[in-house]
Length: 115
Ligand SMILES: NC(=O)c1ccc[n+]([C@@H]2O[C@H](COP(=O)([O-])OP(=O)(O)OC[C@H]3O[C@@H](n4cnc5c(N)ncnc54)[C@H](OP(=O)(O)O)[C@@H]3O)[C@@H](O)[C@H]2O)c1
Image 1 (cartoon, rainbow, N blue to C red):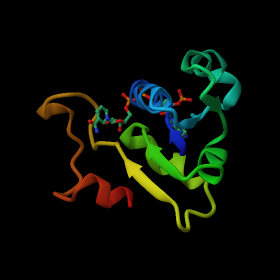
Image 2 (cartoon, rainbow, N blue to C red; image 1 turned 60 degrees about the vertical axis):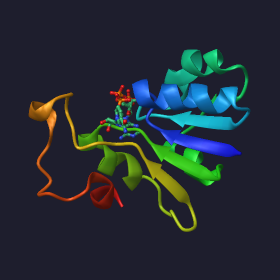
Image 3 (spheres, rainbow, N blue to C red; image 1 turned 180 degrees about the vertical axis):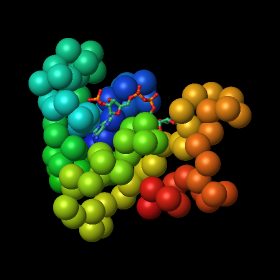
C-alpha cells in the first residue's frame, strides 16, 4: 500500500519506520519541503520518499496526519481535494504530556475537530 504522512517529526518518523518495515511505500512530508527530508528518508530502506503535502495526499491510498495541534489546520489547508481519501488522525489537542499540556477544545473529541 502507498501511505502518505503529513508531519515528519517524532510521530511521522515512527509511523514511517513501522510501515516501511512492513513493506509499504511511504511519502513523508513537512512544512519545509522535500529537500529538508533527504537525510531522514534515507533511513527507511528505499521504501520512503519525501514529497510535498499535496503529493503525500494525491499519490497515496491512505494519509496519516502527524502535525502539532496548532499547525494541523495550516497543514491540511494546502490540499484542495480530499474526496475519497482515507485519513488517520494521530494528532492530539496537546502542547505537552500531562494535564497542563491539554488545549481546551470545549469538550469535543480532537479528531472530530480535525475532521
Ligand atoms: N496519538 C498518539 O498516541 C500521539 C502520541 C504522540 C504524539 N501525538 C501527536 O502527534 C502529533 C505530532 O507530534 P510529534 O511529536 O511528532 O511532533 P513534532 O516532532 O514536533 O513534528 C511535527 C511535524 O509536523 C510538521 N509540520 C508542522 N507544520 C506543518 C505544516 N503546515 N505542513 C506540514 N507539516 C507540518 C513539522 O514539519 P516542519 O519541521 O517542517 O515544521 C514536523 O515534521 C501531535 O499532534 C501530537 O499531539 C499523538
